[in-house]
Length: 302
Image 1: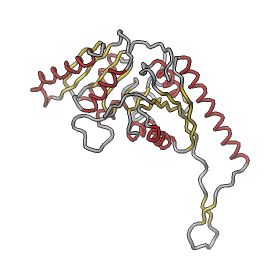
Image 2 (image 1 turned 90 degrees about the vertical axis):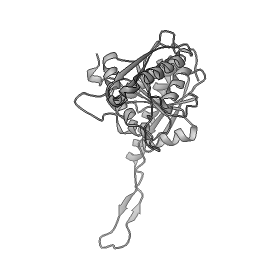
Image 3 (image 1 turned 30 degrees about the vertical axis):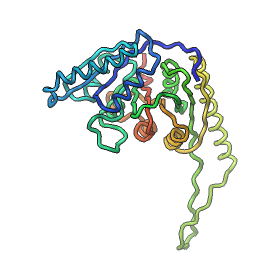
């Protein structure tokens, strides 16, 4: 739940393509308690093949800004010629927004896919937080922050502490412990039947390791909850064991979570696909909106 929380003004880049998911992103932004000093740039990119539709696209973009202005927000249009993912990344590199907001799928997304190509490229290649919004939008009632105790997760905790969540939002912090040991396959020499599966014995070192993992997990959760509380957010902690992405996605379905918040590595210019396997799975398969908090690599931070 929310308590008295100070919200800093954000510089937001909204990628708008007129799709159902972009409309959901606009609705979500309209529900956030953004300060009057918050500046939203509504960016629409049109390809050379759409050049004849310039006036129509310009009018549609102005309608998007009007929707935001009607919510009391400052919004300015930006219409660029090029290819969407490339131009969004270039614009972010040049203007350094605090947050990029875009829909999970565009107008031409194949039916059934969970993430469109533009959203996928943007979330991989920008170095700032990205909020991927999925339609239909049903308010932000329950927020789940996934943490693994890494510096990237701590960055996500701190960003959420500054993020303008709606009043009454139910915030939970989740950590997933490593899966338990798997059974081992034991077959005697000369045995020709099916493999004999025997469980691993819970030796003292195994029990001690599990206890240590639980202790560390609880410590990370306590630290995250304390940081959020200092920012005016009262959060509860959740500890599970298993495959991280699977456990988080199952919890999202069970608890009807509206937004996952998670940290991820920033993009090094000499490397690609640095989002991280867990974060990537959450973006692709969670079925709800996801906020990926990215920033420079620790060695690159000033």
